[in-house]
Image 1 (cartoon, rainbow over the protein chains, first blue to last red):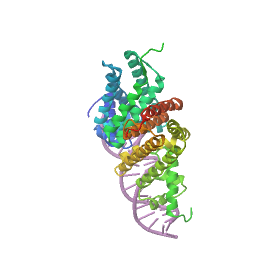
Image 2 (cartoon, helix red, strand yellow; image 1 turned 90 degrees about the vertical axis):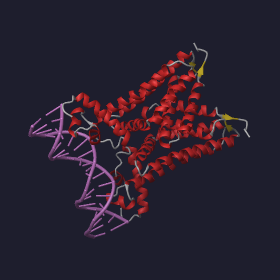
Image 3 (cartoon, each protein chain N blue to C red; image 1 turned 90 degrees about the horizontal axis):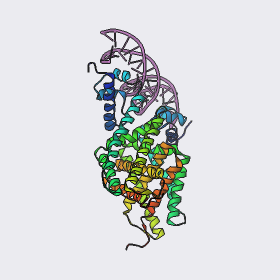
Image 4 (cartoon, each protein chain N blue to C red; image 1 turned 30 degrees about the vertical axis):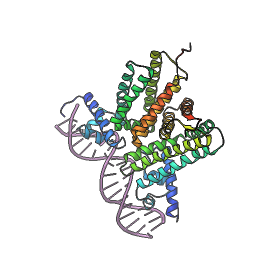
Length: 201
Length: 201
DNA sequence: GTCTATAGGAAGATAGAC
DNA sequence: GTCTATCTTCCTATAGAC
C-alpha cells in the first residue's frame, strides 16, 4: 500500500476494526488484528491514531450514526401513528435479523467504553444520542398525528429505548426472533396507549 | 493460607473473582488479580480449576442464582397483582441502585460467555433461566390473583425480561435512576393491562 | 496440597532506518 | 510517510521442588 494519505488510512482502519469486531468480538480486536484486516503494517496504526482508545472512540461514533440514520429515515414516510411507529421498528428489526453481529458489537463497545477511564464519557454520550433520537421521533410523530402524549416524553423515550435494547439483547442471546418480535410489538402497542387524541393545551 | 481444602479454595476464588469483576470489570479480571484478591499464590488457581473458563462458568452460575433468589422471594408475599408485581420490581430496583457494579458484571459476563466457544452454551442457558423465572412469576401471580393473561405468557415473559434488562442497562450507562424507574413502572403498568379478570376456560 | 519459577505467547506502543 | 525490529508488560498455564 504505497503512499496513501493518513486520512484515508484512518477510514480504512476504522472499517477494518468494525469488521474484526463483528467477526471476533471487541475483546479480540487487537491493533494487530485490525492492521492485518486492513492489510497494513503494525507501524501504520500509530501514525494514524495516537492510541487504540482514539480509534475506538471514532469507531463508536461511526457505528452510532450508521445505526441511527436508516432508523430515523423510516419515520419520514406517510401513515398513521401506528403504521409509522411499527414500520420504523420493523425496519430496525430486519436490520437486527440481518446483521446480528453488528448489533452485538454496539453493546460490547458501550460496555468496553464504560470501563475505560478515558472512554466512559463516550459511553454516556452514546446513550444520550440514542435517547435524543427517540425524543425527536416521539415529538415528531405526535406533531404529525395531531396527538399529545399522556406521559412525559423523557419517560416514554427511555421506555422505548429500553424495550428496543432489551429485546435486541434477548434475541442476540436466545435466538428466537419470532417471540422477541412479538414482545417488541407488544411494547410498541403499549406505547401507543399513551397517545391522547385531544390536545392538552 | 496453610492446608485449606481445594473445595473451600474454590469458593474463595469464586467470591474473589466476583469482587474483582465488580471493581475492575470482567476484561481486567485475570487469574493473577483473582488470586491476589483471595490472597493466594498463582499456582493455587490451577489445582482448583482446570482453566479460567471453568471458573467463569461457576461464577456465572453463582451470580445467576444469587440475583434470582431475592427477586423470587419478593413474590411470595400477600397483596394485589399490582402490589406484588410493583413490589417485586421495586425490590430488584433497590438492589440495582445499591450494587450497580454487580449488575454491570452480569451483562459483561453474558457477552464474554457469548463470544467464548466453550462458554456460549452457558450464556444461552443464563437467559433461559431468567426467562423461566419470569414465566413462573407470571403464572404464579395469575393463579393467585385469579386472572388470566390476554397475551401468550412466553411473549409477556420476554417483554418483562427485556424491559427490566433494558432499563437496568440504561441506568447503568446514564445514571438517571428516577426517570429510569418511572419508565420501568410504566412498563409494568402496561403489563398489567394484559391481565383479564374472567377466566378464559 | 502448596508454592516458586518459568515457559511461551500476545498485547500496546515506540525507535529509528529508509 | 512507511516499515522492521524491538521494548516492556501482562497474560494463561505448567513443571517440579517441598
